[in-house]
Length: 517
Image 1: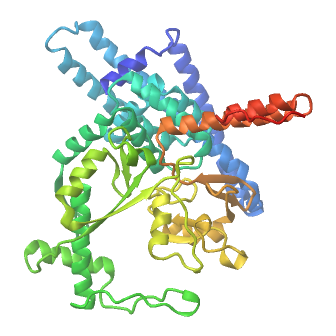
Image 2: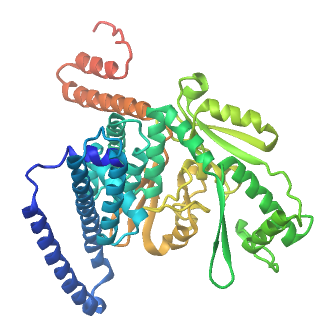
């Protein structure tokens, strides 16, 4: 964290002083008092306000909350920097004890910040580190939070991912790349931005992902924490592939406990293809998994080898140029270098099913397929989940998709097709009809537009699997085509040949030979 603090020091205004801090304190105290008064007034007026009148107030207060968080972060970073400055003044950096004194001073400063900002020490360290990186290397992300385009928690997740970058220049480039995606993903949640930052870093420096994976594997562990009411929590931190294989075996053992040696019965369908609930059993799924875990670990049952399906999303460049195509995306696992994926498949071929999915070369989204059914099942449901990137497609949601449902309901004329499908978690799907007045696929099929009952709209775009360079090249080509079409329309009546030449040049096509008039 010290490097981020030092980099932030270069951005501080030399004229900042006690006067500015006193102004901030006075303004914050006045705002707090005013907020208390408004809250009291609101509590007495709740019964007289129409529900639709809350929309603008909620939106504005949420933006203000994030701006206050950014101000708190700047104060915290400068407070830590002020403490570290005393260490630099008192002792030369070449002194052998300098590093130890700096670490001690940093811990003391963070402890003070944690208490004053009412945060845990762990959260305060993350908070200060993220704020220092945003101030020194990610100014666009920082401004986006202040404008309300990105929520504060998402920006903090991006900045913490940037700590894995090898240098300041890489952090600045990550800021530039992600800034171009903000207009299309304003309603994306923290989980999306965290994963996107990790993915773009892997593109900028493929060695980052390998270093992180190697370091994470060294940290694998199993911990036990006692809880209330005679219970305890056992938590395992494992490599993903091995964890999924172990969980598959655990589910198989749980099905044996619930349904006997024959395992889970086939699903039953009723009228109109509606999935019927399972026959009630003495144990729920979660209870059976817990019992199966105890039996497997204590030796009362023998685990069966679990097979795992890998859904590998590849671009056409990764297929044609494996050595230069960049990292691939594995659903549920994240990004990984193509050669590492090949090695993993070769070493575990007896326990894997491999499915390759290819992206559209222009949009970067998965190709589509249609169905005449009224339910999303099998490969179609799995395809929609893969297209979502494994994140719920409701606004600002970070949940894992559990339900595949129609965006426009069948009763309202919606069809059972990929364009009309959404991957949602249980809460968002069940609340969709009540919380959001309408949800419709975008006209180009690239996402879903959600509309609240008060008329506010926001769009969630489907996951784009292209690299940053491929996306920027496609955006430049699209902008050139648009400009050429406008120029052609402008000059159409004055110089038809010049208009055609502009359009054909933007499309990288040769000029046709027209017969003489």
